[in-house]
Amino acid sequence: MEIVAALLFVGGPALVLLLVRHVAAARALGPIVLCYAAGLLIGLSGLLPDSTGDIRTTITEASLALALPLLLFSVDIAAWRHVAGRAMLSMLLAVVAVVFVATLLFHLFQARGVAAPEQLAGMAVGMYTGGIANMGAIKLALGIPDARYLLFATVDTVIGSLYLLFVLTVAHRLFARFLRPFPRAPQGGETAAESRESQGDLLRLAAIPGIAAALGAAAVCVGLAVVLAPRIGIGEPQVMVIVLLTTFGLLASLVPRLRANRAAPGLGMYLIYVFSLTVAASMDLSALAGMDPSILIFIVVATFGSLALHAVLCRIARVDVDTFLITSVAAIMSPAFVPMVARSLRNPALLMSGMTTGILGFAIGNYLGITVALMLASGG
Image (tube, helix red, strand yellow):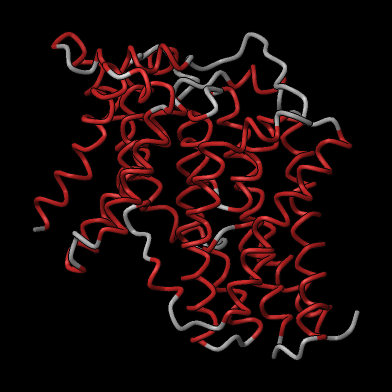
Protein backbone atom coordinates (compact mmCIF):
# COMPACT_ATOMS: atom_id res chain seq x y z
CA MET A 1 0.00 0.00 0.00
CA GLU A 2 2.94 2.33 0.66
CA ILE A 3 4.04 2.01 -2.99
CA VAL A 4 0.52 2.80 -4.21
CA ALA A 5 0.37 5.85 -1.91
CA ALA A 6 3.77 7.07 -3.11
CA LEU A 7 2.70 6.77 -6.75
CA LEU A 8 -0.52 8.62 -5.96
CA PHE A 9 1.24 11.50 -4.24
CA VAL A 10 4.07 11.84 -6.78
CA GLY A 11 2.06 11.11 -9.92
CA GLY A 12 -1.22 12.76 -8.96
CA PRO A 13 -0.10 16.30 -9.91
CA ALA A 14 0.72 15.07 -13.43
CA LEU A 15 -2.93 14.09 -13.87
CA VAL A 16 -3.97 17.49 -12.50
CA LEU A 17 -1.71 19.27 -15.01
CA LEU A 18 -3.21 17.19 -17.81
CA LEU A 19 -6.68 18.23 -16.63
CA VAL A 20 -5.63 21.89 -16.48
CA ARG A 21 -4.30 21.72 -20.02
CA HIS A 22 -7.50 20.31 -21.55
CA VAL A 23 -10.39 21.54 -19.33
CA ALA A 24 -11.21 25.25 -19.15
CA ALA A 25 -12.82 25.04 -15.69
CA ALA A 26 -9.74 23.30 -14.26
CA ARG A 27 -7.51 25.89 -15.91
CA ALA A 28 -9.49 28.66 -14.22
CA LEU A 29 -8.97 27.10 -10.79
CA GLY A 30 -5.29 26.37 -11.39
CA PRO A 31 -3.16 23.35 -10.47
CA ILE A 32 -2.36 24.53 -6.94
CA VAL A 33 -6.01 24.72 -5.89
CA LEU A 34 -6.82 21.43 -7.61
CA CYS A 35 -3.88 19.59 -6.01
CA TYR A 36 -4.76 20.91 -2.57
CA ALA A 37 -8.44 20.08 -3.03
CA ALA A 38 -7.56 16.57 -4.29
CA GLY A 39 -5.38 16.04 -1.24
CA LEU A 40 -8.18 17.12 1.09
CA LEU A 41 -10.57 14.70 -0.59
CA ILE A 42 -8.06 11.86 -0.25
CA GLY A 43 -7.46 12.67 3.42
CA LEU A 44 -11.13 13.03 4.31
CA SER A 45 -12.16 9.92 2.38
CA GLY A 46 -10.20 7.67 4.72
CA LEU A 47 -9.02 5.56 1.77
CA LEU A 48 -5.39 5.65 2.85
CA PRO A 49 -4.59 3.53 5.91
CA ASP A 50 -2.53 4.82 8.82
CA SER A 51 0.39 2.70 7.62
CA THR A 52 0.98 5.22 4.80
CA GLY A 53 1.73 7.99 7.30
CA ASP A 54 5.50 7.49 7.12
CA ILE A 55 5.68 7.60 3.33
CA ARG A 56 3.42 10.68 3.33
CA THR A 57 5.74 12.45 5.75
CA THR A 58 8.82 11.48 3.74
CA ILE A 59 7.35 12.76 0.46
CA THR A 60 6.14 15.97 2.11
CA GLU A 61 9.57 16.77 3.53
CA ALA A 62 11.58 15.69 0.47
CA SER A 63 9.39 17.51 -2.07
CA LEU A 64 9.50 20.77 -0.14
CA ALA A 65 13.23 20.53 0.60
CA LEU A 66 14.09 20.09 -3.08
CA ALA A 67 11.48 22.57 -4.32
CA LEU A 68 12.72 25.55 -2.29
CA PRO A 69 16.20 25.82 -3.85
CA LEU A 70 14.87 24.90 -7.30
CA LEU A 71 12.42 27.82 -7.20
CA LEU A 72 14.95 30.21 -5.69
CA PHE A 73 17.54 29.48 -8.40
CA SER A 74 15.55 31.72 -10.79
CA VAL A 75 15.10 34.64 -8.35
CA ASP A 76 16.55 37.99 -9.38
CA ILE A 77 17.82 39.32 -6.05
CA ALA A 78 18.31 42.83 -7.44
CA ALA A 79 14.58 43.05 -8.23
CA TRP A 80 13.61 42.33 -4.61
CA ARG A 81 14.17 45.94 -3.59
CA HIS A 82 10.86 46.83 -5.25
CA VAL A 83 8.84 44.78 -2.75
CA ALA A 84 11.11 44.36 0.30
CA GLY A 85 9.89 47.41 2.24
CA ARG A 86 6.19 46.63 1.79
CA ALA A 87 6.73 43.00 2.78
CA MET A 88 8.53 43.90 6.02
CA LEU A 89 5.83 46.43 6.89
CA SER A 90 3.10 43.88 6.20
CA MET A 91 4.85 41.27 8.36
CA LEU A 92 5.09 43.77 11.22
CA LEU A 93 1.35 44.45 10.89
CA ALA A 94 0.66 40.68 10.90
CA VAL A 95 2.56 40.35 14.19
CA VAL A 96 0.69 43.31 15.69
CA ALA A 97 -2.61 41.78 14.61
CA VAL A 98 -2.00 38.35 16.15
CA VAL A 99 -0.70 39.81 19.43
CA PHE A 100 -3.77 42.07 19.71
CA VAL A 101 -6.25 39.29 18.91
CA ALA A 102 -4.52 36.78 21.23
CA THR A 103 -4.52 39.34 24.06
CA LEU A 104 -8.20 40.10 23.52
CA LEU A 105 -9.03 36.39 23.53
CA PHE A 106 -7.03 35.94 26.74
CA HIS A 107 -9.18 38.48 28.56
CA LEU A 108 -12.42 37.05 27.17
CA PHE A 109 -11.49 33.48 28.10
CA GLN A 110 -10.19 34.53 31.50
CA ALA A 111 -13.54 36.22 32.20
CA ARG A 112 -15.32 32.96 31.29
CA GLY A 113 -13.18 30.96 33.72
CA VAL A 114 -11.07 29.02 31.18
CA ALA A 115 -7.97 27.63 32.90
CA ALA A 116 -4.59 29.22 32.04
CA PRO A 117 -5.70 31.19 28.95
CA GLU A 118 -2.24 32.76 28.78
CA GLN A 119 -0.99 29.38 27.55
CA LEU A 120 -3.39 29.51 24.61
CA ALA A 121 -2.41 33.12 23.89
CA GLY A 122 1.31 32.31 23.99
CA MET A 123 0.92 29.31 21.67
CA ALA A 124 -1.21 31.36 19.25
CA VAL A 125 1.32 34.20 19.08
CA GLY A 126 4.21 31.79 18.61
CA MET A 127 2.34 29.68 16.06
CA TYR A 128 1.04 32.56 13.95
CA THR A 129 4.35 34.41 13.75
CA GLY A 130 6.82 31.54 13.58
CA GLY A 131 4.96 28.32 12.81
CA ILE A 132 4.58 25.05 14.69
CA ALA A 133 8.35 24.59 14.98
CA ASN A 134 8.41 27.27 17.70
CA MET A 135 5.64 25.72 19.77
CA GLY A 136 7.88 23.11 21.38
CA ALA A 137 10.01 25.79 23.01
CA ILE A 138 6.93 27.70 24.13
CA LYS A 139 5.47 24.51 25.63
CA LEU A 140 8.60 23.92 27.70
CA ALA A 141 8.95 27.55 28.78
CA LEU A 142 5.34 27.85 29.93
CA GLY A 143 4.99 24.32 31.33
CA ILE A 144 2.01 23.56 29.08
CA PRO A 145 0.59 20.03 29.66
CA ASP A 146 1.22 17.54 26.86
CA ALA A 147 -2.49 16.94 26.25
CA ARG A 148 -3.24 20.64 25.81
CA TYR A 149 -0.23 21.21 23.57
CA LEU A 150 -1.01 18.25 21.32
CA LEU A 151 -4.70 19.19 21.09
CA PHE A 152 -3.81 22.77 20.13
CA ALA A 153 -1.37 21.59 17.44
CA THR A 154 -3.81 19.01 16.05
CA VAL A 155 -6.78 21.36 15.85
CA ASP A 156 -4.57 24.04 14.31
CA THR A 157 -3.70 21.59 11.52
CA VAL A 158 -7.38 21.30 10.62
CA ILE A 159 -8.15 25.02 10.89
CA GLY A 160 -4.92 25.85 9.08
CA SER A 161 -6.00 23.66 6.17
CA LEU A 162 -9.27 25.57 5.93
CA TYR A 163 -7.42 28.90 6.15
CA LEU A 164 -5.04 27.86 3.37
CA LEU A 165 -7.88 26.68 1.15
CA PHE A 166 -9.54 30.07 1.69
CA VAL A 167 -6.34 31.90 0.70
CA LEU A 168 -5.89 29.74 -2.40
CA THR A 169 -9.45 30.24 -3.64
CA VAL A 170 -11.47 33.34 -2.76
CA ALA A 171 -9.22 35.43 -0.48
CA HIS A 172 -7.57 37.42 -3.27
CA ARG A 173 -10.87 38.41 -4.89
CA LEU A 174 -12.35 39.28 -1.49
CA PHE A 175 -9.49 41.41 -0.15
CA ALA A 176 -8.79 43.03 -3.53
CA ARG A 177 -12.06 44.92 -3.06
CA PHE A 178 -10.46 47.22 -0.48
CA LEU A 179 -6.69 46.66 -0.71
CA ARG A 180 -4.47 48.16 -3.39
CA PRO A 181 -3.43 45.99 -6.36
CA PHE A 182 0.15 44.81 -6.52
CA PRO A 183 2.24 47.43 -8.39
CA ARG A 184 3.33 45.43 -11.40
CA ALA A 185 6.82 46.20 -12.66
CA PRO A 186 9.61 44.26 -14.36
CA GLN A 187 10.54 41.61 -11.81
CA GLY A 188 12.70 38.57 -11.57
CA GLY A 189 10.99 35.20 -11.91
CA GLU A 190 8.77 33.54 -14.45
CA THR A 191 5.15 34.13 -15.30
CA ALA A 192 2.45 31.53 -14.79
CA ALA A 193 2.42 30.80 -18.52
CA GLU A 194 6.17 30.28 -18.55
CA SER A 195 5.82 27.96 -15.57
CA ARG A 196 3.30 25.75 -17.39
CA GLU A 197 5.48 25.73 -20.50
CA SER A 198 8.60 24.78 -18.58
CA GLN A 199 6.73 21.90 -16.93
CA GLY A 200 5.78 20.62 -20.37
CA ASP A 201 9.39 20.95 -21.42
CA LEU A 202 10.39 18.56 -18.63
CA LEU A 203 9.05 15.67 -20.72
CA ARG A 204 11.42 16.38 -23.62
CA LEU A 205 14.72 14.54 -24.06
CA ALA A 206 16.49 17.83 -24.61
CA ALA A 207 15.53 18.90 -21.09
CA ILE A 208 17.36 16.02 -19.38
CA PRO A 209 20.72 17.84 -18.97
CA GLY A 210 18.96 20.87 -17.47
CA ILE A 211 16.90 18.69 -15.15
CA ALA A 212 19.97 16.77 -14.02
CA ALA A 213 21.94 19.96 -13.36
CA ALA A 214 19.09 21.63 -11.45
CA LEU A 215 18.26 18.53 -9.43
CA GLY A 216 21.92 17.93 -8.61
CA ALA A 217 22.38 21.52 -7.41
CA ALA A 218 19.21 21.30 -5.33
CA ALA A 219 20.34 18.00 -3.80
CA VAL A 220 23.64 19.62 -2.82
CA CYS A 221 21.73 22.46 -1.14
CA VAL A 222 19.54 19.98 0.74
CA GLY A 223 22.50 17.84 1.79
CA LEU A 224 24.43 20.83 3.12
CA ALA A 225 21.38 22.17 4.96
CA VAL A 226 20.59 18.83 6.62
CA VAL A 227 24.21 18.32 7.70
CA LEU A 228 24.86 21.87 8.90
CA ALA A 229 21.54 22.68 10.60
CA PRO A 230 22.12 20.58 13.77
CA ARG A 231 25.70 21.83 14.04
CA ILE A 232 24.95 25.54 14.02
CA GLY A 233 23.34 25.49 17.45
CA ILE A 234 20.95 28.38 16.77
CA GLY A 235 17.25 27.58 17.01
CA GLU A 236 15.53 24.30 16.21
CA PRO A 237 17.18 22.14 13.49
CA GLN A 238 14.00 22.03 11.38
CA VAL A 239 13.90 25.84 11.39
CA MET A 240 17.57 26.12 10.46
CA VAL A 241 17.07 23.70 7.56
CA ILE A 242 14.55 26.13 6.03
CA VAL A 243 16.87 29.07 6.69
CA LEU A 244 19.85 27.31 5.11
CA LEU A 245 17.85 26.05 2.12
CA THR A 246 16.69 29.60 1.45
CA THR A 247 20.21 30.96 1.84
CA PHE A 248 21.83 28.35 -0.41
CA GLY A 249 19.10 28.74 -3.03
CA LEU A 250 19.59 32.51 -3.16
CA LEU A 251 23.37 32.17 -3.31
CA ALA A 252 23.03 29.68 -6.14
CA SER A 253 20.83 32.17 -8.01
CA LEU A 254 23.93 34.34 -8.39
CA VAL A 255 25.35 31.69 -10.74
CA PRO A 256 24.17 32.79 -14.21
CA ARG A 257 23.90 29.26 -15.59
CA LEU A 258 21.67 28.11 -12.74
CA ARG A 259 19.50 31.23 -12.86
CA ALA A 260 18.97 30.74 -16.62
CA ASN A 261 18.12 27.02 -16.26
CA ARG A 262 14.45 26.83 -17.31
CA ALA A 263 14.10 23.31 -15.97
CA ALA A 264 14.67 24.46 -12.36
CA PRO A 265 11.47 26.49 -11.74
CA GLY A 266 9.32 24.01 -13.68
CA LEU A 267 10.65 21.07 -11.67
CA GLY A 268 10.44 23.05 -8.43
CA MET A 269 6.82 23.95 -9.10
CA TYR A 270 5.90 20.35 -9.84
CA LEU A 271 7.38 19.38 -6.47
CA ILE A 272 5.26 22.10 -4.85
CA TYR A 273 2.22 20.46 -6.43
CA VAL A 274 3.35 17.16 -4.90
CA PHE A 275 3.81 18.92 -1.54
CA SER A 276 0.36 20.54 -1.80
CA LEU A 277 -1.42 17.26 -2.51
CA THR A 278 0.49 15.30 0.12
CA VAL A 279 0.21 17.79 2.97
CA ALA A 280 -3.52 18.27 2.33
CA ALA A 281 -4.02 14.49 2.47
CA SER A 282 -2.96 14.57 6.13
CA MET A 283 -6.09 16.48 7.18
CA ASP A 284 -8.21 14.58 9.68
CA LEU A 285 -11.47 16.10 10.90
CA SER A 286 -11.77 13.40 13.55
CA ALA A 287 -9.45 15.58 15.64
CA LEU A 288 -12.43 17.83 16.28
CA ALA A 289 -14.54 15.04 17.80
CA GLY A 290 -14.90 15.08 21.58
CA MET A 291 -12.49 17.96 22.10
CA ASP A 292 -12.64 20.97 24.40
CA PRO A 293 -14.63 23.51 22.34
CA SER A 294 -12.81 26.43 23.96
CA ILE A 295 -9.59 25.51 22.14
CA LEU A 296 -11.41 25.21 18.82
CA ILE A 297 -13.02 28.63 19.32
CA PHE A 298 -9.70 30.17 20.36
CA ILE A 299 -7.87 28.87 17.28
CA VAL A 300 -10.62 29.82 14.80
CA VAL A 301 -10.86 33.37 16.14
CA ALA A 302 -7.08 33.75 16.47
CA THR A 303 -6.54 32.59 12.88
CA PHE A 304 -9.29 34.42 11.04
CA GLY A 305 -9.52 37.34 13.48
CA SER A 306 -5.84 38.16 13.07
CA LEU A 307 -6.23 37.78 9.29
CA ALA A 308 -9.08 40.32 9.27
CA LEU A 309 -7.26 42.79 11.52
CA HIS A 310 -4.10 42.38 9.43
CA ALA A 311 -6.12 43.31 6.34
CA VAL A 312 -7.52 46.44 8.03
CA LEU A 313 -4.03 47.53 9.08
CA CYS A 314 -2.72 46.92 5.56
CA ARG A 315 -5.54 49.09 4.18
CA ILE A 316 -4.46 51.92 6.51
CA ALA A 317 -0.77 51.42 5.64
CA ARG A 318 -1.55 51.15 1.88
CA VAL A 319 -0.03 47.67 1.55
CA ASP A 320 -1.12 45.83 -1.61
CA VAL A 321 -3.28 42.69 -1.59
CA ASP A 322 -0.60 40.28 -2.89
CA THR A 323 1.95 41.36 -0.29
CA PHE A 324 -0.71 41.14 2.43
CA LEU A 325 -1.61 37.57 1.51
CA ILE A 326 1.94 36.29 1.09
CA THR A 327 3.04 37.69 4.47
CA SER A 328 -0.14 36.42 6.13
CA VAL A 329 0.66 32.91 4.93
CA ALA A 330 4.32 33.28 5.94
CA ALA A 331 3.21 34.23 9.46
CA ILE A 332 0.22 31.95 10.02
CA MET A 333 1.39 28.87 8.09
CA SER A 334 5.23 29.28 7.92
CA PRO A 335 7.55 29.80 4.91
CA ALA A 336 6.96 26.21 3.76
CA PHE A 337 3.64 27.29 2.21
CA VAL A 338 4.91 30.51 0.59
CA PRO A 339 5.83 29.01 -2.83
CA MET A 340 2.37 27.43 -3.08
CA VAL A 341 0.60 30.76 -2.51
CA ALA A 342 3.04 32.82 -4.60
CA ARG A 343 2.27 30.56 -7.56
CA SER A 344 -1.46 30.66 -6.83
CA LEU A 345 -1.26 34.47 -6.95
CA ARG A 346 0.68 34.19 -10.23
CA ASN A 347 3.26 36.46 -8.65
CA PRO A 348 6.63 34.70 -8.28
CA ALA A 349 8.26 38.07 -7.56
CA LEU A 350 6.91 37.72 -4.00
CA LEU A 351 8.61 34.38 -3.35
CA MET A 352 11.72 35.88 -1.79
CA SER A 353 9.67 38.35 0.28
CA GLY A 354 7.50 35.58 1.69
CA MET A 355 10.46 33.37 2.53
CA THR A 356 12.39 36.23 4.16
CA THR A 357 9.51 37.48 6.28
CA GLY A 358 8.60 33.91 7.23
CA ILE A 359 12.14 33.28 8.45
CA LEU A 360 11.95 36.53 10.42
CA GLY A 361 8.79 35.16 12.02
CA PHE A 362 10.67 31.97 12.93
CA ALA A 363 13.32 34.12 14.61
CA ILE A 364 10.95 36.14 16.81
CA GLY A 365 8.14 33.63 17.37
CA ASN A 366 9.63 31.96 20.45
CA TYR A 367 10.48 35.19 22.23
CA LEU A 368 7.23 36.90 21.37
CA GLY A 369 4.97 33.99 22.34
CA ILE A 370 6.70 33.45 25.69
CA THR A 371 6.83 37.18 26.48
CA VAL A 372 3.15 37.76 25.72
CA ALA A 373 2.09 34.75 27.80
CA LEU A 374 4.21 35.77 30.82
CA MET A 375 3.01 39.37 30.68
CA LEU A 376 -0.63 38.30 30.50
CA ALA A 377 -0.19 35.82 33.35
CA SER A 378 1.37 38.49 35.55
CA GLY A 379 -1.35 40.99 34.72
CA GLY A 380 1.02 43.21 32.76
